[in-house]
Image 1 (cartoon, rainbow, N blue to C red):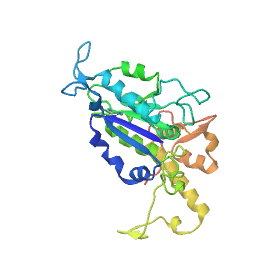
Image 2 (cartoon, rainbow, N blue to C red; image 1 turned 60 degrees about the vertical axis):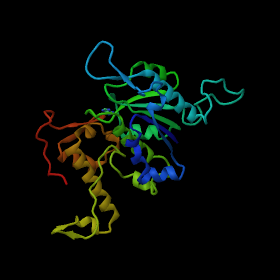
Image 3 (cartoon, helix red, strand yellow; image 1 turned 90 degrees about the vertical axis):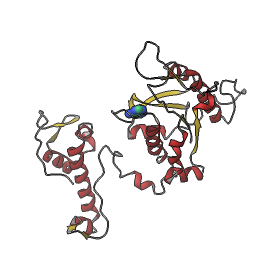
Image 4 (cartoon, rainbow, N blue to C red; image 1 turned 180 degrees about the vertical axis):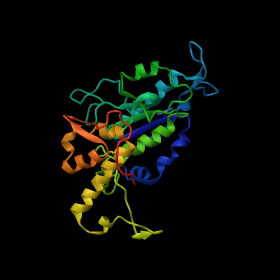
Length: 292
Ligand code: ADE
């Protein structure tokens, strides 16, 4: 997979040299380039912003440096060739081999919310370009223009406002990158983590068996795989009900066995037809023990 990040603060992305993502880059599993948007300015001051038409607070990022930077990223994704040039007769259409069109991710609090499903989808693509906006955002015409060359995805990390896209890109590249085959050494660890099956992860423990008078739950020392799996599944259901009722409401009843349904009932949820709903529709005092 190839990833290009364009930012006016390329140093912000230095963390992508570290840990699993840094290792994946060294191993050639991820080809990741960070480019300074100011390289694509034409004036002495390397200006990237200007005042907004229509008035209002703050500054808006100028379109031309973005168009030049994104065109350079497109070319880089085509091994330096001009993606607009006619393809040699008999060759596959540009950008359609394997991972489809290049994807332009524009981090923005006004985008669609990034989830594990988004990460899974983007991990299958061959070329991702991230455009880190700052100030009040990028001139909207860049998005229109980019739509001719990319699949454009305005994407939000969540319902809060950051100072720019860089922190969001760090999070997204990590979430996507770790799903690229080979990046995480033991692929089994991707199976049982939070959000992999619509539930939060179960609690985990390590040695010592008793720590500051707190013992590890007995069942985990039993060596009984069936009981351990059931205990973990129960904790997942309880935790998800306590912390993320929106995820419980999105569960498909087809994935819930009798024991799952009994645990959910204790937490105040029942299966009604094709949905999981609150037993008490007012949604307030659902019963159930406190959750670890
Ligand atoms: N830029 C500013 N706020 C953001 C957010 N919540 N998600 C993604 N990019 C952003």
